Image (cartoon, rainbow over all chains, first blue to last red; front, top):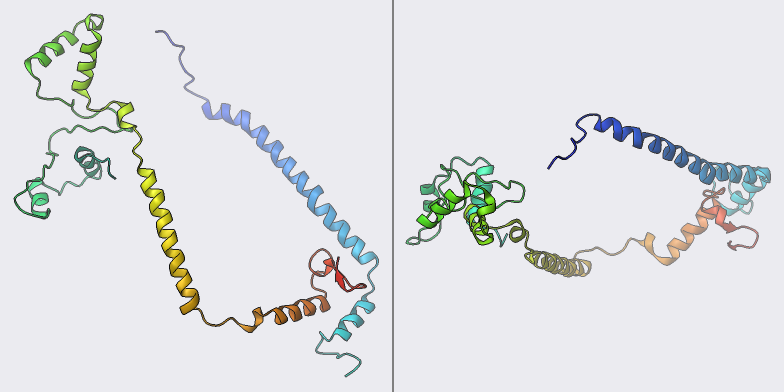
Amino acid sequence: MSLPKPAMRGLLAKRLRFHLPIAFALSLVAAAAFKFAVTEPRKQAYADFYKQYDAMKEFNAMKEAGVFQSVRPSGE
Amino acid sequence: MLHLTAGRVGGLLSRRGVAAFSSSSVKMASHGHGEVTEQADMSVPMYWDRLDTPLPDRPYKDTLSSTDKSLKQKEKGPWNNLSKEEKLALYRMTFKESFAEMKKPTGEWKTVVGGIFFFIGFTGLVVLWQRYYVYPPHPRTLDEEWQAMQVKRMLDMRVNPVEGFSAKWDYEKGQWK
């Protein structure tokens, strides 16, 4: 009945040595995934929107629709 | 709660340190007269069957008959001399229920789940009654025509034109993309 003596010390250190690199790597992966799946497409969408954006045309369309209080549609 | 024995309740009470409960006060507080409730004497070491505290303060059988006493004497010698039945008898002297017997499923979960469903159903009936007798009439902003006018106004204002609401509306064709 002679079992080997179990590890009595350094248990947390052993766990951290295993899990911390994995946690670090997974965090980097998560950040990279968010950057390339969310922020880059969003920046591109905004760039594309404003490339062809005519502010005066949009303003006149909104004015005719009657959403402004300071300037009414041309009919009134 | 159905499988709690009196001893286990006593163990739980002593665990909470309820030293004020003496046996006489419990007898006076119990309903009915003439029937004597068996209250464990908590001033001496107690026996319990618990999974988390496996070794009670005293063995189960503390008044041993002469055969039990002779067996206990035999236990002091080498255990290879004990037969299987003797070993089992010694175990049952020290413990009332084995771990397997303690862990036996009770079927209590069926009562619990049934009770949960029953009361959820009852609550459903209460909510239904509320819908017809308590709730005031709907505000007009939830009508179909009002909602349509609201959507049109949001599109006219160009709400979220880049990635959100108005981005999904095709302004040339006048329809959703």
